[in-house]
Length: 546
Image 1 (cartoon, rainbow, N blue to C red):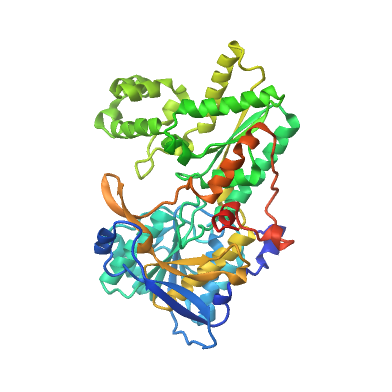
Image 2: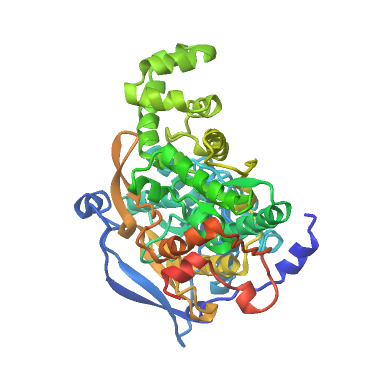
């Protein structure tokens, strides 16, 4: 594999480990746990993996002997920076415990387990991917592990390869599947452990035990660098308003973190829009008023950050999308010609939703009726919310201009930052955090645990003071309606409007709106002073009261 100079230098970086994962390790168990909601239902569904204790790894002088074992690893869902380091941490710890241990990578996600596609990971393969971004070492996929025939098919190759445990690296859905798989193998006495690792750049897999999902730190720093560059350009040219949509399927964590890092003129937080029952026009008016105020001060430029999932959080749009979902699922919908679709939809929608649909620019209305994702959801990343908002702001300002309420100029540029951040070379924080997660996963397996997620806490402190361990996945679950049925799922963490990160943003946004308070974070730094290279996100610092 051809390597860049950065990759060559980066390969030599040795991730920092918590004191509890260096040398000899013992396990400390806490109190029994219960799920965050619907305790009785979750307990019934997971009788073999419910109520297990939290565990923590601590240093010990006692040297342990480890019998040989083989482990399988799966990357599941969208890419996130640091995934390769989870695998490297797991591999290094396995070989440290017993050089005869083997690690098998299932190819292209959970489907690789079901379809028996795998490779044995070796020193040569692992060393090629240390501290690199992407998931290309073994690939990823979105196959859901939910059916008994999948579990049994996976079991065949697991037994053939003598695998003791499977580690699944993924987000909330993937780790829910890991928990279901762990329960199935425990209930059938298969002797196979299942461990999860918390991954997603969206930042919505976190709770009292998981401080942050890996990849969030690097992705936000990557986006913040480019937003800073755009802001510097805006401040130099002084003639454009930049509407920037940021990845984040549901939660607005990325938009909020980038706002805290860059101090844009406007940042919309979806959770606040929903809580305040705001309409699309409320949002457009809010942005237009800021544009007008800045124009009055001679500043015909600025930046607007928009979370990817915004449309679904506007209560009126949410109702429209729900009715569209039902309407487009009918057999009749499949027979309507594309040229006639808009008229057909307007004739079928309720009066309230038809009025909203009719008010949308034609391009956005079309995007709302595009093919759904595998879960039946609107593909929000394909909806050009940034263009919708800028077009509607432009229309409102033009109307105000005729009334003498707006005297400036308004010219918009559009950006969507998504894939650019998912495979970036991990920051030192993510490189260290992920390596520690992989090491923790190996220790959980060695200590006979199943149905656990590897965790690392206290990560605002220097790495040696981090605390590694595991949390039962059932502890994070509740029951939610999915595709018309109540299912056990890990509860998504949305932006808390009473949380310190949002409060800090809300405290300053009026000043950032009117004045030019731009911050230019610059690129991720890998070498240099610790306060520059090893810092965590502003979100995490504020949440931890640092």
